Image (cartoon, rainbow over all chains, first blue to last red; front, top):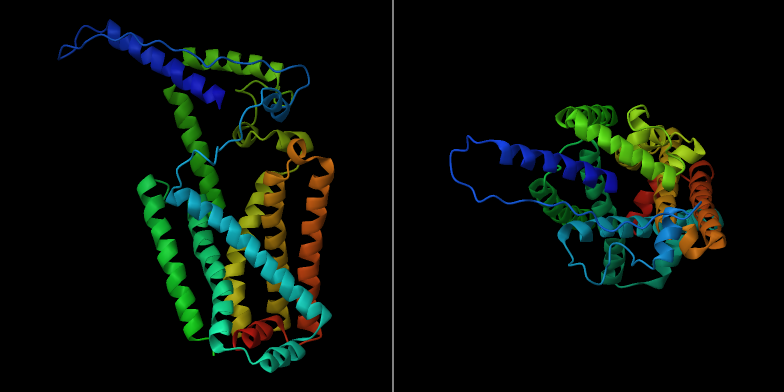
Length: 178
Length: 171
């Protein structure tokens, strides 16, 4: 990171130098002398890793979650992880179910409980929404991986698309669930 | 393929970026980079200009250290993700042992890789210690194996993964 910053600054420095030397400017400019100041660098101790150095300097965790304003991008990103974990729990639970009992027994057991349909519907919704969210946002990630839709505007519009798309798919799947 | 295209694009933009920087500034950068890499990051000792494009780009110290080919792993992860999108509806509509087994394998791999990223990000050795990191890796491996075993059970002993999903959804 520091390398890229430095590269940017050195290019910038060249540009300002060139500007201040040219005398053919069409309008009058107030001359500003720009000065580049690097952040104070702390050198690595011998054999120290990046994490050890940060620990030694007691630097705060990045991103500093308590001072960052929540944004659509970050919320969608962490929700992708959260839904992924939830779905992993669902698949592991299904695996355990198939491994230790069999499906007809489980179906009979659930019928025997005589749950109200609202309870069954909300349980299905709790699986369906993460599934469709993860599906839609996964497609969005694949589009990014192909190098498309990477401007801020497109990132936001596809983000809203993911929210509405996953909600609609959830409602549709629940409508065709019995 | 998506990935190939991505790779080509990034490579192109990298070259373009290099061309736009004047040679003077670049050589200065290289010097600074070399100094920095000699000081701390022992793994990246090659000069910037001669290091292979991939190593310079991914830049992850782990990739250089372990010699594991993370580029092809990344590509495989994407291929499995794309395959899942087709296999899931295929298994639900036409449940057959072949499709179900492919789906079961893809889901287990996807779960494993997804949770592995979590362990790598949140259970880092300097933060939580070696033991917790190892436990995390073991736990996710166990979860993936449990998932795969259960799915194979329902495919070859029960009446198929796709059918099982439909039955559960119709409850």
